[in-house]
Length: 100
Image (cartoon, rainbow, N blue to C red; front, top):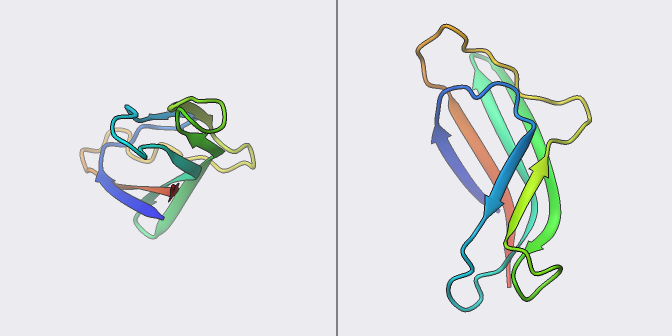
């Protein structure tokens, strides 16, 4: 599992993400289980899950190296907590990647 922590302004309710790679180099493809984005404001943590369960590999699956993922519709969403505020929350991106 790869974890990327990014400090960013709130993006509001996330519905879709686009993920890709350029396919450069041998063995550049990878399997993406899901992307989990967590937002922590004070003591509250909210997360949104973008399931994929597909390859991003020109030689596997359907050969695509780009995927547009839609948020899981289980009611989870990342709400806008920062309207009118100037602070920068931590946004954590969890990607589960299996290299071949």
